[in-house]
Image (cartoon, rainbow, N blue to C red; front, side):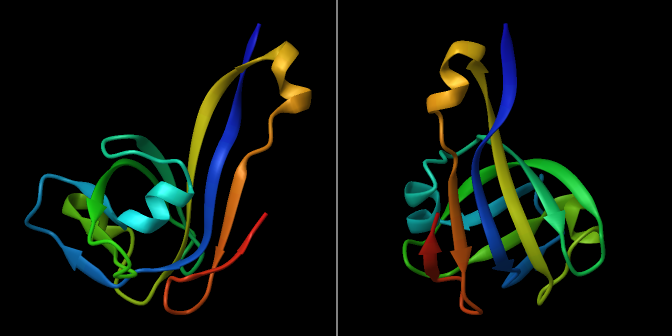
Length: 118
């Protein structure tokens, strides 16, 4: 049996830009993606700490070390510049592997720089 488990979480991400005239996705600093072991076009869940909205989208790579967290397309109605987010990705794990699996948890500062990895 497989279970859906948290693979990586970026906690305390601050939205730096929005672009409603885009097909839809979340732009994420390439360095954050790499450290969180996330890849372009990967599905992510976004939890808006500021207003309680939740949505699912996919990642596009933002400029490395820029701190960019961009909300694009229809998701602009769920998160605005200055909102605080949690971005999470999940994976399927065989039950026998669960006890050995640890998700990556990145805690960001107010400039979207990693201040802690758990």
